[in-house]
Length: 244
Length: 222
Image 1 (cartoon, helix red, strand yellow):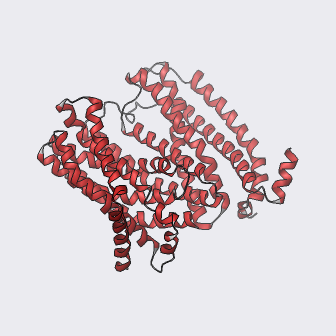
Image 2: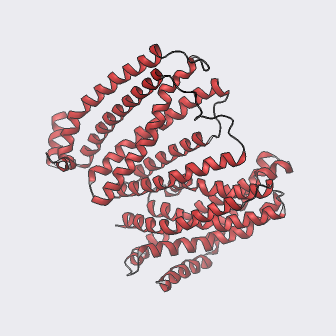
Image 3: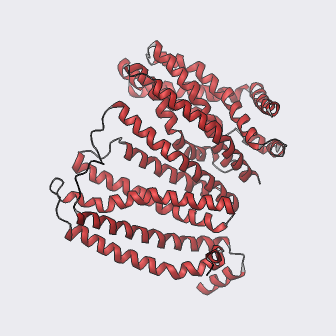
């Protein structure tokens, strides 16, 4: 089987349609298992009490927020290099989910920070760079929304995406040095006590669930984007009439 | 090649000199934004000295963004940008020339005004020197990176606000190292580390930004 066969929107559309229920189902099952582990099996933490359970949402969301941006950049680069329309659409379909996970990571982080550190927000290197990541997502989506011509929107977004990726390490280290040059950080996120195995499992299952959710949602979103772009073609018309 | 670069820079500077009103707006914007801060936070000299470097730097970022919207827009509107892109020289050279001209027109005046504003905030003499030095290294980066944003948002509705959303996150390292250098000079921890990092960032943007701007111009104009 030739994988490139599915690089065309017309062939990718039905494939995505077939895959979505699988990934969505896996997301629900894994999410249920993950939540069960995190709420009922994982023991209460010795230091942080029940409040630590937010980690099962927070850490997977933070992982996804960074990873989705990289995946988007990968598809943007592929699209610019090989001129494949579908790659741009995938990158575009991923962006809102990435922004959502960034927001969830910041939000749950604030909820976690309040009982543990006694403050909603500190200008810690990680928090600040996550906030800037959210700005990068917003900028990407705003640029896409402002351009009407699809070809230009794809390419301009891809370029911005790639500039952001080059800049992310620089931003991260500058924020880190900015913080550490002044004073030692009063809270450390890295120096966590060795985690119980079951907690780690809960986190991994939740991360997998987030993965599956991301794939399912972005496939569904890319299907809509494809239909919107290809509305002048015969197969897309047939699809739309079938749905109506 | 060098001739082409000089021509591009000379043309933009000449245009700016002939239309002085446009050009002065960004400089006065800079002065006004800086002057708003003491009114907002109160005239405590000790507090002003602490926030001074950051305020001057943030205002410089904003003033730069304000003038960036026009970097390619005027040439795009009258069609001369397309002619320039058709020239036999690499388009990245055009982008470099445009960024350079933007720095000469908008960056250098900021360097001259900044010490005066620094005095208003009660910065000591050596900090003023570092402030000018950090702005001298940092403002070219603002023009170079901003060129990417200006090229991407060329001719879009609401381009002015959009460019802010796109470019401000990318300015974060410049702001941190620029303001950090001045604070380092004031607190006695030294400013060499910050200035060196700023210099490294300048070299990197000199290499990459014109190239990406030229790609973005091609996407926007085609």
